[in-house]
Image 1 (cartoon, rainbow, N blue to C red):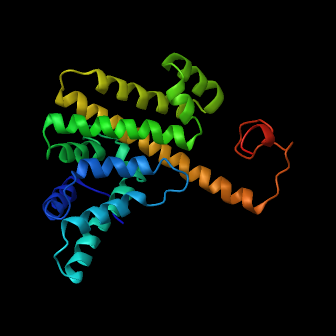
Image 2: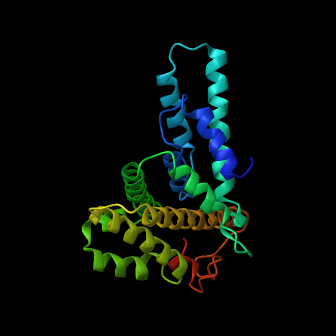
Length: 239
C-alpha cells in the first residue's frame, strides 16, 4: 500500500471514473468512517465490489478482475493515507499533504455535491462513533445538551481528546444541516477537519486492538488496575 498524493488521486480519477459511479471523495471518507470500528470488517470494499459488478455485468471475468484490482488498490491506498502521520504534519510553509489530496478530491464535484457528500458522511460518522462506543440509544433519545454531558461523563470520561473529536463531528454535522448556502472554502476546511477526526479514531482503534491482544495473553482480575491506564479498577472500566 502507498499513501495518496495529489498526482495519484488525479490518476485514480481518470482510471476509476468509468469503473464505479461513486465519487472518490465519498469513497475516501466512507473508508475513514469504517476505521472507527475496533474490528473493521471491510464491509465498504464489498459494497464497492457489488456496485462495480452491477455496473459491469457484460464484461469478461478477466476484465472484471482487473477492474476489481484497481478499486482495491485505491481502497488500500486510502487506508494507508489515514494511517500515515506525515499526511497531517508539516514543518514548512507548504500545504499539508492531506490538504492537497482533499482539494483534488473535491475538485471533481460541484459545491452542492460536496456539501451533500460531507453531510451524509458526517451523519454516518456520528452514528459509527455512537455505535462503536455504546451510546446509540442516547444519541437519539437525549436532547443535545444532555447528550454532550452524558458522552463526556459516561462514555469518554478521562479521554478528553476522543470526547472533543466526537463533539467536533457533531458540530460539523449540525452546521451542514442548518446551512442554506454553501461556501467552497468552508466545505474544504470541514473536509480536512473530518479527515483528521477520523484519523484520530483510527489511531485509537489500533491502540484498543493492541490492548485487547494483550488482555488475551494475561489474566486480569476484576479488582486489578485497568490496563488501559485510566486509573480505575478493571471491573469499572474496560471489563
